[in-house]
Image 1 (spheres, rainbow, N blue to C red):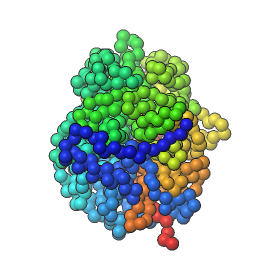
Image 2 (image 1 turned 120 degrees about the vertical axis):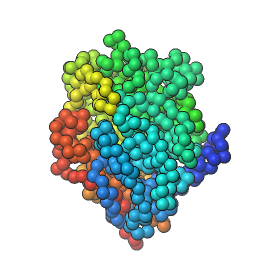
Image 3 (image 1 turned 45 degrees about the vertical axis):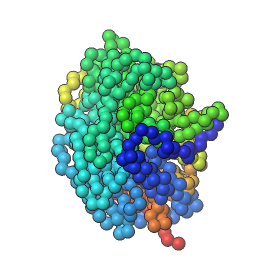
Amino acid sequence: MHLKMSCALAAAGLLAVTAATTHANDSLMELLENDDLWATQLGNYQGHRYSKLSDINRDNVNNLRPAWQFSTGVLRGHEGGPLYVGDGRLYIHTPFPNKVFALDLEEDGRVIWSYEPDQDSRVIPVMCCDTVNRGVAYADGKIFLNQADNTVVALNAEDGEVLWEVSNGDHTQGETMTMSPLVVHDKVIVGVSGGEYGIRGHLTAYDIETGEMAWRGYSQGPDSEVLIDPETTLMMGEPIGEADLGVTTWPDGEWERGGGAPWGWVTYDPELDLIYYGTGNPGTWNPDQRAIDGEPADNKWGITVFARDPNTGETKWVYQKVPFDEWDYDGVNENVLIDVEVDGENRKGLAIIDRTGFGFLMDRENGELITVEKFAPETNWATHYDMETGRPVLDEDYSPFTQGVDVNTTDICPTAMGAKNMQPSSFSPETGLMYAGINRICMNYEPFETDYVAGQPYVGATLTMMPAPVENGGMEGRMGSFIAWDPVAGEVVWEVDERFAVWSGALTTAGDLAFYGTLEGYVKAVDIENGEELWRFKTPSGIIGNVNTFRHEGKQYIAVLSGVGGWAGIGLAAGLEDPEEGLGAVGVFSALSDYTELGGVLTVFELPDS
């Protein structure tokens, strides 16, 4: 069995779109097909984070050096990464206050223009896990930004002028925005954060020219608002059949504060004309409050993969990875679109290295499961997935619901952070493998009764975290690793241990390299075939951003934002000291301050001239 990358983008298959829609889509598609550019946060619509550039390769990467650096002036967690669309500028962003900079590549990052919105600072304490932002999007001469205060803004890429802005939510109710938008056709697709505040998650499409709302699909509630047709929307390859599961699988009224925030990544298949994304945790972390008559309830559609029509928002298929979540296994990790050969048959695949500790391979046409296997061997909350029902088979020893409210269920693996959080993976068509930073952390989990108050935390659980058990001669006390994963065979090909969780997005290139960053602040290059480290550089702060690459004036560059923070670095970012703060992250990452400090810096790397 092997994987192969699809070359067919099938723009002709994009039916029933207006001339303006086609133009906007074609404009971005042209950029995405240019190997010199990095025009979306995930590198292409399919989420591969792979570059065909090979000027920097395994033979010369040891000569890689900083070309220049730029300080953003913001001291919180810097996620996402820079965009390059061929106009001689890098477009970068910051966490709150969500500055945007256009930097001149001809003059070592001279600021061409900058934008800083005027936001209500009271949004800061409402942001669950640091004031992060996962990056801007570009299309049709515009930069699109999701601000923390729920404002979606379109900027003129030439001068930074605000072209339009629209409110997507209300932070006084617990809604915020951290995700990177994605432009498909003439629409910019945005999601909302706030599952820990009992919001009702939704994904929304706005017209890129006017900011007018085109559609909104909720994560739970009546089918008419989730945009599901139970007679045609598929689940495990068959029509759902039963109506309004987004209501009936919740206790009375709980769906209205049911979480399901889609704060992660959106990918797109131009041939099928479908977008793919995942929803987050289902409201309160106390599963007892989401049970019906004392029995587990699926709480649909939390922790669910959605395939939607980007033109109307209508749902083609759904797959719920964790019915009745008991562990906060948010389902927002990126859905990477890869064409695969399985048992001699070509399949349009969708691959996920998931929070749950399992790697999923699905059919992206209908949502059927192909392969589900553990990539983190310490994973113990479930033994395996039933491939007929699509449901996990639980180990009740690690079930907080089974153990009961106010009982501390110990040694659950992985932690609520997941065996991999939202840091995006990379897929190399050269090897057929996926590459990703991994969290090797377990937890104790004690649920308690909590009351819903709009705009206040609606968590209902206390967590402590600890490094996962070390097996097979791994690094003692390590809390992270970088892996190569075969999504068809469902197995780890190689693994590199790291002291802390790896919270950086991966990059692979035709130069036989995989890049990633570490929480201590190192950006590293390893051999794509075996994980051998070939180069490293210590940046000014820990890295939770994504490593990107591009070529300007015939020269390839590597670029990454450093700036420790996010959930893993929330202790440093927010000045927290209680080990249970940050939902347990402060305690397990207490040693991080021995290795790095706050700072927001873009570092651009190059090879020396011959």
